[in-house]
Image (tube, rainbow, N blue to C red):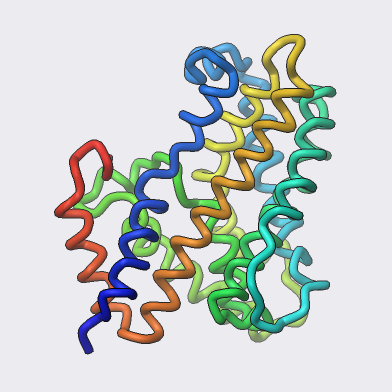
Length: 268
């Protein structure tokens, strides 16, 4: 079945969001200086702390960030999550890198609930294990990865590279009441997501680490942080909603056509 003009426009908007995330650029504009310069100043111990905190935050989030959400389709409510994220970011910025192990799981949980909010608004069933993992997978979107050097780049590469991991993890969660941290199938998925998510976390931490304005920047950066992943989730769950209507193959074909017609700078 051919996609309607309205649905093609929705896919085009999703493509624009997914292929042009722009978090680092927005963060750099807030700071008034290139973010790459600030990132270079992070010590190696700081980078290790970021990697450790990132993976832990994803594990904590998977355990229960949507446990108290009602599973009924409704309009998404992005503002409330942005407010919570801004407050936690301000606190994290005030205390600097030392606060990361505490602040990041809270911020990640807020963002995950925001992602789930978008998923629910697009007709997803939050009781399904696969949907929870698809929400978690959004954290892998919008950052560079060696896998992006393949023939397909960006969003389609993330979908392809994590499809089997998500399926295996969903099967595991469907068969077990409790998600054991030591389960290899979950560990592999979380590690794959964390490897990409920590890129944005490092950018966030670097922005918050700017002397004097850490707390102010922390609130602003977290606002951008949650906005970034809300946009990724809108694109991702629009793709999934259209796939339920037209089939994955048809939507993927149309998405590839948008990739081919976009300017090189837009899909880089």
